Image (tube, rainbow, N blue to C red; front, side, top):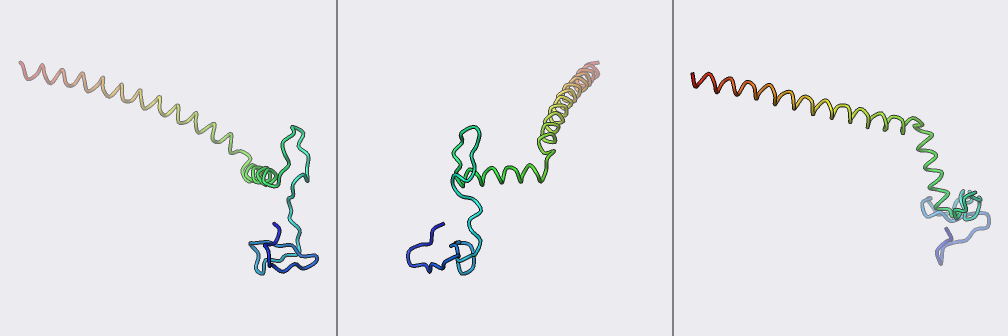
Amino acid sequence: MPPPPGAPVVPGKFYNDWADGHLVGMPPPLSDDAVEFPDGTPATAAQQARDVTTFLVWASDPHRNDRHRIGLYVFAYLSGLLLLAIAWKRKIWKRGATRNAQDTHD
């Protein structure tokens, strides 16, 4: 970022708000129009930073999407089993309730 008014300007140094002393020797790694996207996306520093972080998330766990898809299948399967268990429980307890009612009337 450009230095604020009144900040010292040293040749060969760059202003960085996060660094101690606010002057660093490394130029900004991302700048506007440094790359050209084939689909015409504007090559802003914010867009490039978003692309880099998206890549780093993928690189840290490349099987994440597969694991999430499998998790959805497991959730659907277990939900189906839960519904079957509820239906089976109601059927068994309904049968037991009618037997107990008949036993008390005899």
